[in-house]
Length: 375
Image 1: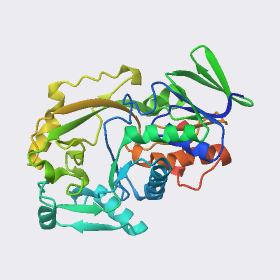
Image 2 (image 1 turned 180 degrees about the horizontal axis):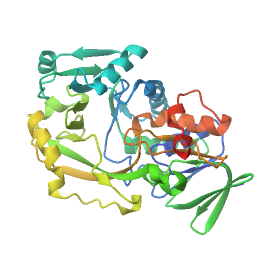
Image 3 (image 1 turned 135 degrees about the vertical axis):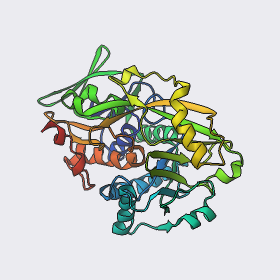
Image 4 (image 1 turned 180 degrees about the vertical axis):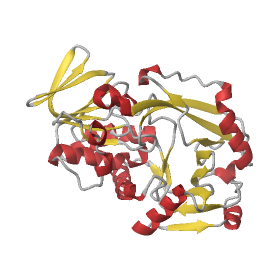
């Protein structure tokens, strides 16, 4: 055996899985098509949102609370600063499903928060132009993650603890057999006891029986110049998500001292294969987000100074695939996080290590079982 465990893809989830496996003293080797910390898949783009009161449903809150603890543990072990909890705003109609989910999450798990009416939002956060019927929900345990640095930090910490990383290694097949798994990398075959597939946008390549439920999609992120940059620094401008009618956007305070990241909370289009991504962005593709910025964020110039395209895999129900790969007893799948995985990546790293070591985890992942589609 070349190792006890192979991790296929050392990106958002794979880097954290490798770190957690190494922490437990499990001999693991990670295979990365590019290099840890690259910007060619779902982890690029300078920043990601962290939040605990969850628009997508309260079932995620225990994962988020654990993720927050693990982000801090990774920072402590590495000496790197990765998570700035500068707070977060969820903005939308008070009677909407998304705002109800946020309020239920906060109440059920006693999360520190405030509910702000339109007048209070105007006083505290004039960077947002509020619409009739909207409220603001302030999540104290929200903030900004640095994705590229976090992935690199986790991979380097895993290596310091004894894990191995093979960069520039495109895995072409993961082949289970009676007593292990063969991992095909170019003209070399590695043999391991178990494999953890964390292939992000390429999830369907390794789970063909689930492929009709998994779609790679193009994400486009945009950064807008601020007229008064001090009003958009982390101490004055919390991260935000706005779900109101046809508006589905998110934003992050300035990290470069000049521009503010505001982008759609949705992909720009489907791809037949993750390898088909065209990173060019047509000017007309930005019309919708530019209009929203012009209407709702008066302190920003509504033409972006930076535009970047990335990849992510989405499932048909919008929830990830986490658990045993159907039909493969010794292969674990963690993929297709549908645009909301990075904030929980540290917790899913623990999940991966738990599954390898024990075949189960104490964290709630039942709703993410890949078998729901295989059935």
